[in-house]
Amino acid sequence: MLYSKIEGEGKPFVIMHGFLGKSDNWKTLAGQYVEAGFQVHILDLRNHGRSFHSDEWSYEAMSQDIFEYCQANNLDKIDLLGHSMGGKVAMLFAATHPEIVDKLIVADIGPKFYKQHHQDILAGLNAVDFSVKPGRADVEEIVSQYVSDLGTRQFLLKNLYWKEPGQLAFRFNLEVFNNNPDAIGKPLAEGLVFDKPTLFIRGGESRYILDSDVDAIRGYFPNLQLETIPNAGHWLHAENPKMFFDFTTAFLKS
Image 1 (tube, rainbow, N blue to C red):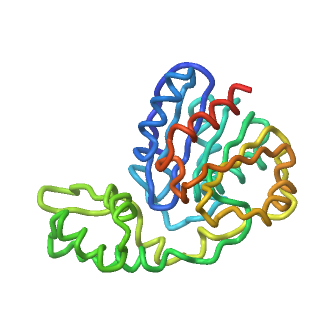
Image 2 (image 1 turned 180 degrees about the horizontal axis):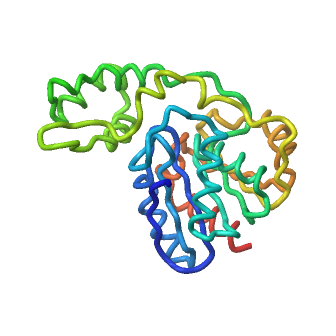
Image 3 (image 1 turned 45 degrees about the vertical axis):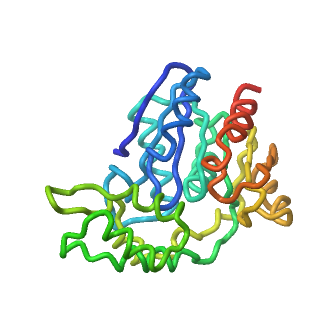
């Protein structure tokens, strides 16, 4: 079963992080959604955070995990939000289980194919040799040789934990990501449709959702609303959390 943090009372609102992320990335916003009257479930997807590791890593497997999570927690009507990889999981789950999802929010990802573009990040993570028992500063120094952006490095290093005294490790399953690097870019299957209210939010500086993508997105999600957060990139919910919260709560309460 997936690891989750559940807070609040009200309509169940399930939130899923992106690739190499974890539920803690959404902790602050989750608290605000609780105050807005939702029962918030922030999940660690398989091979991420505190959830189980598996050699099977696909959108179909992750969507099935969400179905089993909903069954185990007696969630028969939910609102659903996913960012990046989590957004693709959310799209697939909503399209295959529309009886469970009332409203869908997708943050800065489309249903299309994305070619592999995490090579530098994976190279930096793979360069860390935990057998020599590096400290946090040592790990950051190694990763910085491959990942120059400080914000991205800080995001990645949130996955460090003390496996045992003196021994750091990454929480995510780096081995399965190495073995199947193209899984994350796969498109949503053709012919799937979710016709309930759907909100896509993109960063104005991000290239993940282009104007030319909108017609194709509407083919999957005909009841589409698209919002753009100006001067924000792919991490739009972290770069402008107030506007992200305002867009999403207005949609959920409409």
